[in-house]
Length: 126
Image 1 (cartoon, rainbow, N blue to C red):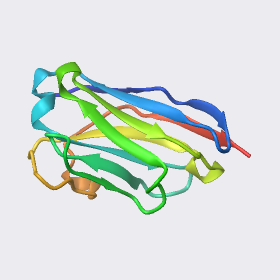
Image 2: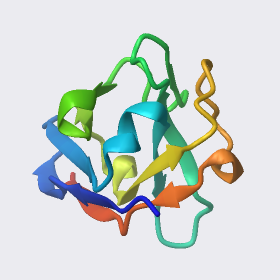
Image 3: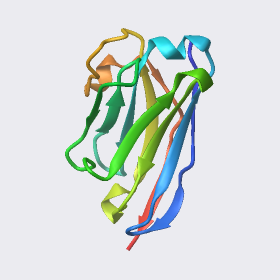
Image 4: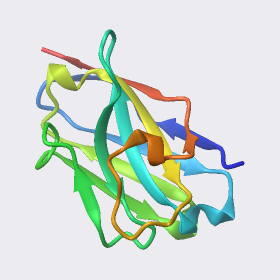
């Protein structure tokens, strides 16, 4: 099994920035496509961003496109989500996920991801 641990969440004012980090426990991290999802209270889990195993292909949810950037450092078994121009509606628990299929085109379907972190809380105040 692959263990994923998110960090970097916290409280920030609207318009501010945060960088989330996802650290993987296995060296096989480099074989996996990776993604970020989020879930706010009372809402369904929402796709945020995804990146293929090589890092050259990314996808973003419409609500975060142009504001968030996903990246990865395979040498460190680490993935990042840079979050800029944060809005109160970005408030949610953010989850890191890994897709072991090594697909070249990142998927936006949470059912395609095999491993999940415990989540990190992001709260954006108005």
